[in-house]
Image (cartoon, rainbow, N blue to C red; front, side, top):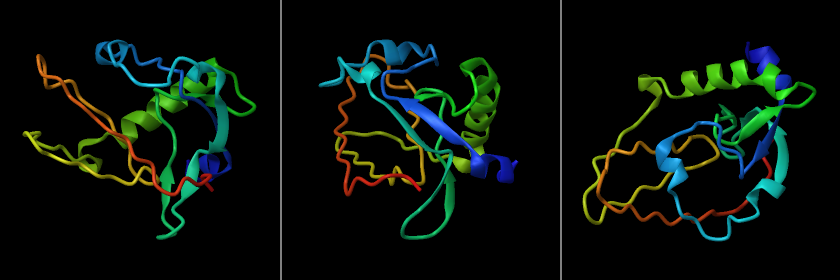
Length: 135
């Protein structure tokens, strides 16, 4: 599996969202009216530039398919990898309270919000630092 994944290239779109997650339908983000126009190719397995460790760069929300594969061919593997990435032993949960700040490195982790704050407004500011192409 690792050898196969090392050779795959993912096709990604910020406008894609096949999850059907109810909370995604109500999200309001700035400057996202044209996201479906932007598509990018990146390796499915990327190497962290500082640690040299490998991490999966794939998710059900933005990975449309794999290069040289159809969406239908790609979907079972995308879903399998998402299930793998979100296994409990690979996750961290925060107990949100007023003033809580969370910082993570998108080069080696995934943010997967769970709508467990019903009736509350969650405000999130994204601050990308040192943009780089995944390798």
